[in-house]
Image (cartoon, rainbow, N blue to C red; front, side, top):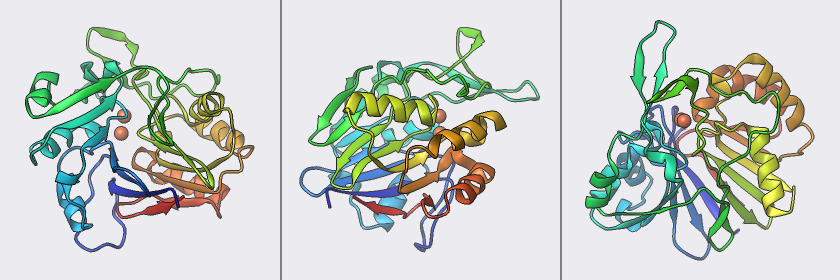
Length: 277
Ligand SMILES: [Fe+2]
Ligand SMILES: [Fe+2]
């Protein structure tokens, strides 16, 4: 085993009694050798509780990755920092952008990172921000910005950025984490706003290999159109992925479809779900 991956925050919980759910994602990545990394932090309501419930000390985690600047991935960063020590925080320079969701009734809901960079730095965050593909620890890579190349991955058309009201926000800061393991590549998704197939293709190109063993996390297929789901399923069939552990923004309907299409690979990535690779 090279890595143990555990879902700490998700929209739904598994059988570990006392864990709590919220709309959000946090994934603990524990290498067999080396320090643990926390990939995303949820909204902030369940992170510390669930870590402790799963016998992990929040103060022992000093490396954090923010996949993108949405509240449901970044809101737990301040409570984590407040447990008392400086943390190195990896991400994209665009994570601090102001952004909102426009609901079908015209209501505008703020969805950006809920704390300012100054506030987070005062609490001990040391940001390490880059838009580029890079290795952040042995065998652990951040994808950097993911080029939008497939014609069918149009993303979530209800997201906008403050000051660019007419242009949907395609969330360029969205990054995934790639682990090189003895079973193949494991890709951990935040919301995968760039599209699952775009992320797979970009990862394969950057890593020079296409042996993806597992995909874990939010696919955002629950917020994209039916055409994107159909074409994503068709394209995924060419990848031969052994573990498709979807959660968070995948949603019930897209999860059901993925389970039907990939019955031996699909697993719901609920709080407490663990993958070793
Ligand atoms: Fe999300
Ligand atoms: Fe998101």
